[in-house]
Image (cartoon, rainbow, N blue to C red; front, top):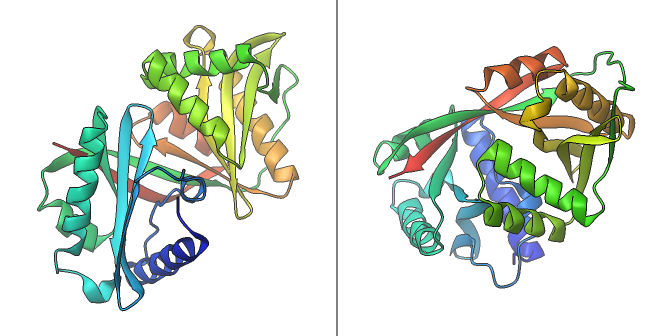
Length: 274
């Protein structure tokens, strides 16, 4: 669990690092604010009371993502490598099937570090922001809050079918999400039948769309597009800026999001730890 002082110092260090290279680090602040007391997922290094390096581990079902940063004045001293070695050992011990290192696509310092590590390129993820355009609300598709145990099991099933989770992994992942603050969980419905799910996470006036999935048997009918338009309208009307993330190789989703008014804001590269 991170203290308020630690969170503030991480935020200050993030601003310094981002300004240095004109990049955006993906530190998953919604997760940082919801760390549990007994979790050892954060590695901080200080010099004379100043936070000079930070590395965080983020669990997503059967995979773990790692992202970190070092103050520009303290780089090339092996600090990040030491923190990374500790994090890798902890993650391997936890039994995760996939360990990914995350870095801004245009960070020259990250690229130099990655080249020296035992890892290989896995994918690029786009973070996209919605630019307000007229969107027609669909009456064919409705979105309601996920409330019941049946709804929860439906979300678990969709994570298995659409995101490659095992049932146990999906259950644990969804239980953990339920324990965190700042999330709304929705079921996508057509004619009283559940056809998908979507989750919205809130942070600093932003609404981030995650876990967007339609049952394979219901895909190809435009339900996803209609659900997306409805949720975007809903969140924008509340006063939020709306964001989402998508893998660059997912051409279908990328075209869908762009056609609904989303524009690529930044890119994050992921590297598989070998």
